[in-house]
Length: 93
Image 1 (cartoon, one colour):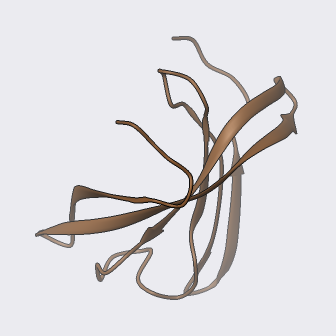
Image 2 (cartoon, helix red, strand yellow):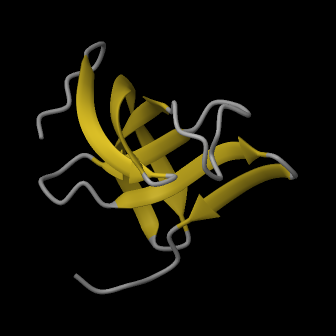
């Protein structure tokens, strides 16, 4: 999927036994550093409408690699009991 900064894309997500058409805002491009190295990323913000674990408690941000693989390397959000920051620490593709 093409991700242009300043434009939104729409994706279908199945959550809470329902299918949701979710708007995903493409915010900006960033270079981030993790334990795996430095990545050129695209920062996206899904506008969640579902009632599951990520239900409208705060904004969710996802950093995807700015290449054809679009690997999520970092995610940040609030949940009912606090907040979560997840960073990719390894894997194979």
